[in-house]
Image (cartoon, rainbow, N blue to C red; front, side):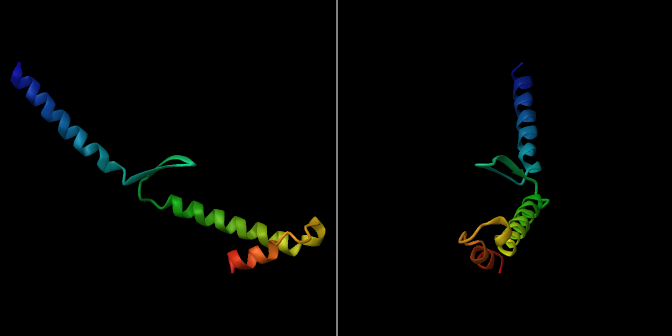
Length: 83
């Protein structure tokens, strides 16, 4: 009985040892829990968010008269953030 218990514990340790190798990292933050599997999805999502922000700032800068946003600093923020 003792040998069976030792073998079962050893087998369990081997299985548990391999489990964390599937994920490369994880983050816990304001957006919730995120598992990074190394495929680069996070970088693509941040790039899309950056492009969308620049597009909205450029639109607010070019159409400030139409939107009635005088003195909001959209053009200055667009030049500083998006180059």
